Image 1 (cartoon, rainbow, N blue to C red):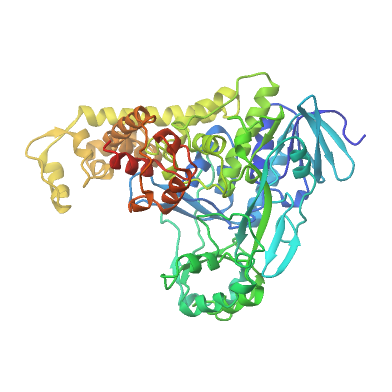
Image 2: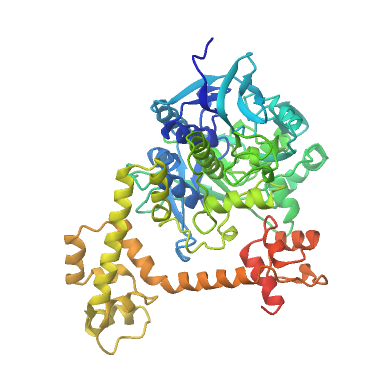
Amino acid sequence: MIFQSEYDVIVVGGGHAGAEAAAAAANLGVKTLLVTMNLQNIAQMSCNPAMGGIAKGQIVREIDALGGYSGIITDKTMIQFKMLNQSKGPAMWSPRAQSDRMRFAEEWRLTLEGIPMLDFFQDMVNSLIIENGKACGVRTAMGMSIRSKAVILTNGTFLNGLIHIGEKQFGGGRMGESAAFGITEHMIDLGFTSGRMKTGTPPRVDGRSIDYSKMIEQPGDENPSKFSYTETPKLIHQRSCWITYTNQEVHDLLREGFDRSPMFNGTIQSTGPRYCPSIEDKINRFAEKDRHQIFAEPEGWNTVEYYINGFSTSLPDDVQAKALRSVPGFENVKIFRPGYAIEYDYFAPTQLKHTLETKPVEGLYCAGQINGTTGYEEAAAQGLMAGINAALKIKEQEPLILQRNEAYIGVLIDDLITKGTEEPYRMFTSRAEYRILLRQDNADERLTLKGHAIGLASNERLKRVEEKYSKAEALRVYFEEHSIKPEEINPVIESRGGTPLKQANKMLPVIARPELKLADMIQLERVKTFVEENQYDQEELEQTEIQIKYKGYIKKEQNNADKLIRLENLKIPDHIDYHSFGSMSIEARQKLSSVRPSTVAQASRISGISPADISVLLIYMGR
């Protein structure tokens, strides 16, 4: 026998979900085996070389706070960092990083190899061992039967994967890698409901053939932050991205290939991601727009390969090349590989419990794109939670279930298992009712204690969190107890168009003024001395300022949430014309018109209906 004993957990698939699942289970002390089709491709960035973004960055920080690795790996391998939406309130701030694709995968591989309780095996899993309604292991293409107490499926886009480039079709889980067969058919025999989804990717090109003089440079932040709350290295040097735009000529060239497009000729019938459409879908759906953004993103520190963000396509390769070379900056571009679409099997996530264990089969967990999601971050979060809960069940401990008011991860999983999804699910801040509470800056406060309680977050992590918020509170109390004179701060207030102070006031309400920043107070010698003596870092200062400035907004949102809960069972008149609601999203109008929910509660559970959409509905109903 090649395997010496039974495993506690077997993780099938080595993508972002599989990597986090395997790491979590093994770090919780259960013997874990990661089975993947190619050990050289663990944690591959199959699409864009980036982590984070709107709501996704919050998820990465939540993973980190719980004791996962995605944030740490990103910090170690990123080539650019940006905090998005800083012109808006802190609930919308979202970290995003460009990564070195090759180093990212390598760092993940080395990290996993450093976990003592984790073993590896290269093979294709094509069926499960099921005994008395319970998952007891897997069978592989090489005829191996490997037994375990739990199985986590993280197959990504590989289940019966089919790649499309124009009229060309061939099997594959991603370009250059074969599809996985057998699991879908076995799961259906076990009573599971499956479906097909589609995603796509753009061409990769030779950066040496790009004319950057015709593009606009997109540098990283001047003082870049990071994802992990641990002592990961600070990013000193960065690589820029570049932005350009399509034009009418590009659109006309793309339309010439529509008759050979698998999206338009009926070859692809599965649903693609609504919020990450292909370029042909963009110019078809938004025909009134005369241009679309195209980003040239470097794939790493030293490689010349570039990812063409915004140009995802499955059009014939000759059409892709002709159209891309009509985009300013790409006139002489050399293409490494064309864009393509891929169809793959997924299983309706309504068949899962909150732990991500399946309802039909005990001890079987699903995480990632197999559940109908899209994105590295969503996959990694599910993998982490599946790995945690599989290990906790084996150890006969209570599961870890995050609520919607505790984490975006909680929103993600609750949405999936409650509402299901018929299109690739992507997280947005608008999906969370409590997004002012679920900020990227306070993920450590929200979740580190939970990660520590189960044994995944270290004592050092917990100590760092306690010190951070203790110091933030101490500074808040300092401002609450000390006063400031008009002559000390009025010059700053007046320079920014604010109303000057008429008399001395406590510092706390003065800092809360919109025209002032905490940095203005730190310019005062006594405040500066207090901050320096107590060795405040940027994170602690930022946390203090957010708690002071947004206290009212946080309280107001909590009140709004309480009202929404009280109105959940309010009956909706059946004569409502949802298409007349101009301030409601197009997706919401379409889905509400199709489902025709009878109550607000039912409407709020429909996939894609946001709290903002419900607010519009309540206003219409006089609430």
